[in-house]
Image 1 (cartoon, rainbow, N blue to C red):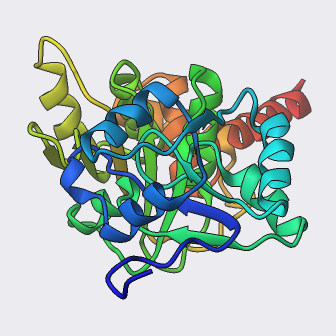
Image 2 (tube, rainbow, N blue to C red):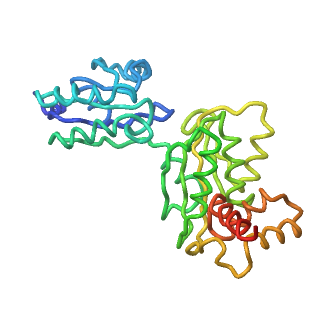
Image 3 (cartoon, rainbow, N blue to C red):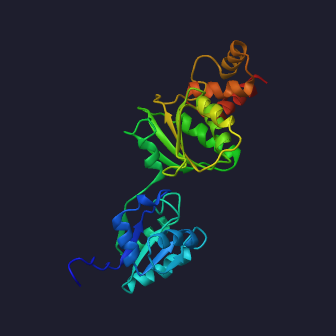
Length: 297
């Protein structure tokens, strides 16, 4: 081997980041690993083949996705134990981050196999650094629940969590759900919540929508069609430790009645607003209300 040729890969599991849109974002190290690996485990072999063809890489591929990762892990770990180098990729970004790969990595570690990360593009961090929201403290939460009720409950619970400082929460969201998710965010945190919605990251039509959740909702509502996967970031404000519902000397029912009278809103909206004031989820405040009403019967 000449001094200009790269050293062959040692046996192990290589977690390789791939571009999230722009093919120019792949790293030189990632290309070397993909060329030298004995096999590439892909979330979707058809999608990965486009990348490999672009860079004239001929390494054989095998599928490794959410439906076969358990059985495929046993096979791939066996190959590594026999001295092979296996690369793992998702369709875009880092394998294991809201994509297959995490289970395989955990099983490889348990088997005493080297697991080597090959860093690169990631939608959550790419969106964060250009969001204009706090970067000192952030939390990646993946995809929100698809069902409306579960999604609202999740967001209400996040809104009720005490925080000493403002924290940026990061989610992934599909274009056909983004409008409903923004409506749920506004209901849980209020219309002034600061957010950033990043669309089509690194691609030709990359776009950042920044402002209050109410402003971003209006912007998207005015469009005939919403396209592209979203990375959604919100600035969860600092708030003190939540007090149990009803700990205020004024009862929940009295506070609800006052809110309805002063603001002209219905009980459902009053519950949401009171929950935010108390740092509780709407369901917790509602249960306290039911307890108060039961005592008066």
